[in-house]
Image (tube, rainbow, N blue to C red; front, side):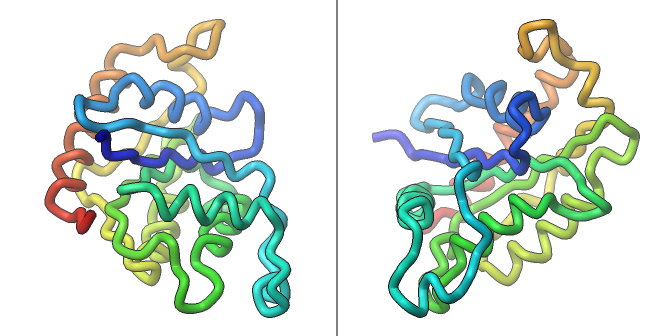
Length: 186
């Protein structure tokens, strides 16, 4: 049975670069692994009242179950104002609650960030890593995955056309799989 690794794109935009990166990664999963895109598009803003009054939205229940059943997770994020997009932080919060039921706990992770500019989402990458420490998600350290000028690597169909980027992503996937094997408890 394949180990399932979740790919979480931190953007809601239909044509987001994070979603395109996730799509490109699907075919890079090695034998014995499956990469699965986990949608965060329909998660209402986290409100502890949902959990305190046993009234969690169905989208929370489904999302939490999906994350529980993963072996690991790769977060693919753009940068908004030198941090992670609100929608990605919301997904992290939904999965970490209620207290004592953190579905992220112990899942080997990785952070891939990108931007159309030179900084490649550096601020978002490191802010996300801060949250992952608290959630007990061991995050791959090397290679660091920062993808600059991400707007220039796609063809007219939204497929990855840049071989240098493809090769770098394939190496990063290989490194993540090794990281996963060393850090997985499942």
